[in-house]
Image (cartoon, rainbow, N blue to C red; front, side, top):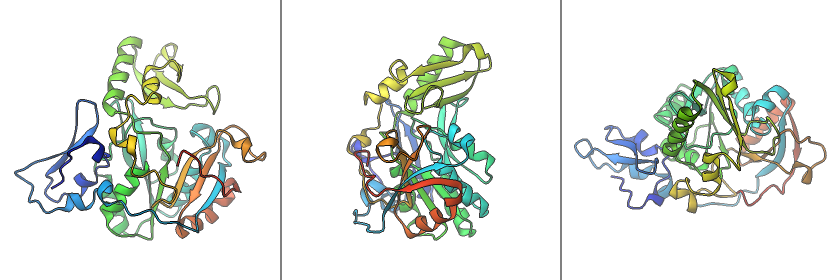
Length: 330
């Protein structure tokens, strides 16, 4: 059975919970607000399945990929790009999957439950749930099982998440699927769901009213300015604050509420197991004068599958090849 001796040895990907046929594993939150596996000894038969799918203990050795390609990307639909944190490239990929009759998994923020969790959608309109950054670790729940179910049905599946979640999914599946497309988002670290819940409750008691939506990195002032917006049924009580004043964002960017495993991330690699890696390009003018400053993605494509899909979405994006996109963020 899986036995977490040090907090740094668990990234909270939910792979162990998803693989357990006996339902003997449940991820529970500790005092710092992070989820860790807890074993029900009466149900566990010590089969070792949970240990075999842990991405920290089973992450493949990084190997150079000469086929890796780098691009600057903006979706052509400016409405979608405005709703997105940066360039909207994920929506372009996900829309192609939907058009093939496929399923898209991503993280959505539920302000009522005070949590970020993964879910799936099967139409373009609902892709809006996945736009905008979520600076909170997502609850995967049983999404890995659902991914496998849809793949066995022969459907295309796109799964987006942090690099540890992507490797957790790959370990859980135990084999490659031609119709699985994975998109990892470069992250700074994973903030505590517990701290986030306490923060929203504090804001609720302080502001009053009824919260309807929360956005990180809303492009209210500028794409290059990190902010927090909490929307209220009473619009006069809407909350907008920059990173330098908001208490939650200050704890995040001060490295105070990040998961212990993030400080020595096992998944911070140039050559990744995903098909796509996407992240911001604040300094787009340093790379190209052909893009505006309203939001651009840097994109790395790691697989032949990713390259084929990129060809399919080219009519819907503005793009420019740029091989030297590797930065300290990777």
